[in-house]
Length: 280
Image: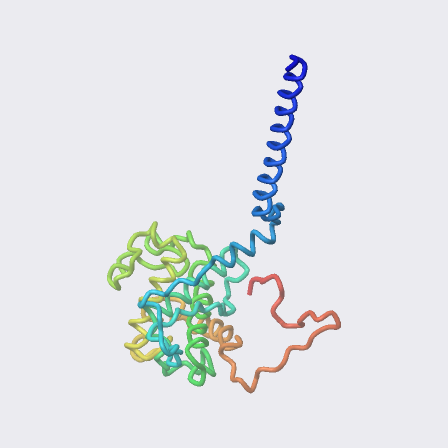
């Protein structure tokens, strides 16, 4: 056999093998690709849907499972303490800090001096005509208003006032020994210059003398009630002036005397009490 014929035969065999291998590779690849699903990017919405679908509710612990649901209909044993925002008119309203003094006095009368509101003094008609018919809030307001009227004559509303040769101190001019005798927290002149402490002590003293004598300022062989400890309450002219002021306040007026307050076209009240408190 010629040499050229042998080479041609060899080349033909190699070509045949290459073709057969290529065909086999194509067939194999086609088979593999037929088993692969179409691939595409996962959208955010699809991912969220898959995540939500995987969520399963957890079983609640036994201590928070109630069958059936219990609805409380009774009044709770413990109720939050209501903060009384009612501030009555006081004679020191025009002074810086006057409302704070009123709040302190109201707190004292509502606290350790609460007995004051349970007493109807025998001379109360002179001081507060509607006192007996009013509830606790307005009775409390009277005692605070009376203290503010007394402060006018005791200290002219000056918390740092000192009377006599260093004897009486503060808004209501309290003697330190008297404060100690009645169990007040403020027992020194310096402490009694604090208006909050001074009013607290005054309320504590009145909570003893008013129920004891059943009086605000009554003379029966001696001065009784508040007058037992405060000099201005023994002066008939000053008693008349203070009682006239307290009697004129809304918390001492009968309900039938209360009338709606007229308003201007702009809706501003024409109340006799000015927006800026003035000195009485």
